Image (spheres, rainbow, N blue to C red):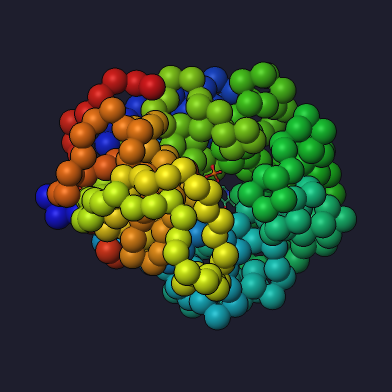
Length: 363
Ligand SMILES: *Cc1c(COP(=O)(O)O)cnc(C)c1O
């Protein structure tokens, strides 16, 4: 097969989805599968749905469109706060969206009315992670504004933690959200169906039984795709961490000194990499680079390989200590973290190869 390529083990993703969905279900929490890290790859989305996710959540129109064109008939939730310039697209593509801005909500309602639809909204509250969401004291005024917008239906409130500042979901901030939901209901005379509180960073709290009952929706990406919670990035029990593997080819293999020769300035990316002298080493040049992947997020499956560095199109790997013999034309494989997965999925230079049958056992 022409390299580089990414294998996607669909059975492992389905299995991970089933594991996460079942444990959420035990706490009365429904899971939206978040597909943004895989650019809305249709087969991945289908595997997540087979595992029991109630719908698909993504931050990008292109991704949602890709899944819809592939015939995936699911409930779509737009994750990123909609831009004012694209409200017509939003109401056509997704049945519901996360929101925090009054002007956008007004425009969404007008757009929904134009096409004779009702658009469902979840209002986001910022509980300290300082990304999206209204400050808690603005929630009731915003709810009242939404109540006046005839083509919108307020289905609930939500929050997002950990993604931006790393703030952990806690019993305190989760209770805060639940209290806010009750205040909104009481003050505005409505019932909120949904309290959409967590992403993969909330899995620990959930299994510790610390999640307030009222919380009934999770939006999970990494936990399913890579089998990890996202506070300490520990592997989640009964999930696979290697559903995605990057494979690149050795295109040059030579013994070279470990110290560069000559006066040194900046490298191609403006950095000044440091080298230490370990004598002559056997170095493999691979045909994948920073244009394809976040190099700091890849781990060779052979633990005896060392990543030396990368430019836009080359990855340099020290293979001296490997117990396996290597030659030009061999393929080396790498596990990925979230940031590396996102980049690889977005790179048009890396072929995506979904596998229908599982390759190996569970980690
Ligand atoms: C990306 C995203 C998620 C999913 O986060 P994971 O850590 O991958 O589970 C959930 N909610 C929102 C709003 C997001 O942007």
